[in-house]
Image (cartoon, rainbow, N blue to C red):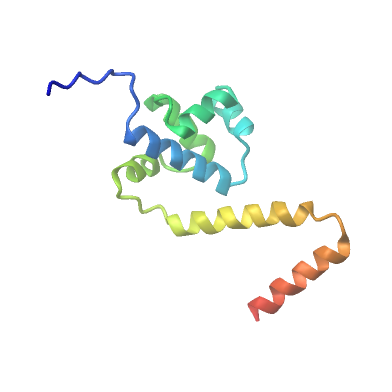
Length: 125
């Protein structure tokens, strides 16, 4: 069977891995897609395409993203090569903390917030 040469504009697993890492870091840091997009000079729709691996990211744009997220650009390369050492477990914990804080702040009643806080303190002990 003859394989067609891949189009240079086609995305690959590397593009998806890098996009996924951008998404993971952005969320774990509590940065909205719109805020990050503004910082790097793209629309939030374009950033979403990067994060999903639909569009390729140029090295210069990846550099801009790494600066906006305050991480070394190698974080994205390491995640794409499977050699990630940027404390992935810590990022998951940070993301959970951000999501938990958002959920907590959406609780309107003070007595319910107090009950959640007491529950957390009881679990820690």
